[in-house]
Amino acid sequence: MDTKQPYPDDERRWQAVVERDRGADGRFYYGVKTTGIFCRPSCSSRLPKRHNVEFFRTIEAAETGGYRACRRCRPGTASKEQQLEKKIVAACRRIEASEGPLTLAELAQGAGLSPSYFQRLFKRLVGVSPKQYAAAHRSRRFKEQLQTGSPVTEAIYAAGFSSTSGAYDKEKDQLAMLPKEYRAGGAGVSIHYGIAQSFLGWVIVASTEKGVCAIEFGEEPSSLPGQLRRRFPQARLQQGEAGFAVLLQEVIAGINAPARGIDLPLDIQGTVFQQQVWESLRRIQPGETRSYSEVAREIGRPRAVRAVASACAANKLAVAIPCHRVVAKGGGLGGYRWGVERKAQLLAAEHDQGSE
Ligand SMILES: [Zn+2]
Image (cartoon, rainbow, N blue to C red):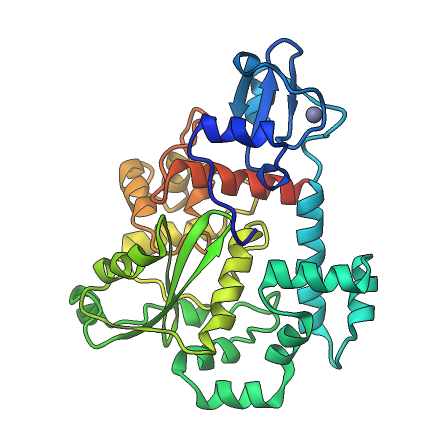
């Protein structure tokens, strides 16, 4: 999941089908016109002719198109890769919740995997070994670093970063910059950032001392700091230090498992109206969607449908403020600041994670 790129076109989708690419599972489905059956990209059934194939972003779309699910690859159930990802995410949560150190054998047994395979898989998906991950969460030295380190990491620690299911501190969401500073594009505000890959491509994560202030997708890692600069032209931008990697990793984990979400203090900056819209979006549960007009009604401004759409488009906090859960009224996907393909993939991932 650390190297997955979105599927920008049917040509690459077809390539994934030809290769029976497991990494493509959950990101699109294909229907075979001659049989009326739809499959995951990795399905082991006989390869259909290209001209008999059409692609769907979601299971619903395939079903609406008149297809029924293949009995062999069983779209709608978690793919092998997704099941493994889930096991590793569960292991992370277990490490975080544990009072004492857990051995590799204990963790592997909990996941139902052999220790050596568990170790390799964990490292591939999380980027560090289970031991390193545990150390980051537990060691006294790490905590001391957090306490004496940058304000960003202090904020993470104070928010109880290690227990992502913990109570959400609403005060952390308050407008961090004073309105004057905000108008000046973040003048005098210090912003740390880091860049990493998610299953939807490259991501830049930025944080002020109050919380995460931007999560944005981009095509190239080199273009992302410039993208951030345009959002905060007056702020002091600097690359995050060692402690920032933990925050970055947590955000990436939340993007890769969007049904779980990103439970970190946010530094939400926008107009009062935008903040009302964004607050409303955060109440939409994973796997659910709303139309723009439903959101407008919910905030008591039923006629402000277009303004709601603009506020969604102005969101700087991808996934954390789930603007991908707002779709067009007739069932279309509507727009997405970071490309409608990513929106479709986020919704498909939430659907898959929610249906188990
Ligand atoms: Zn199949």
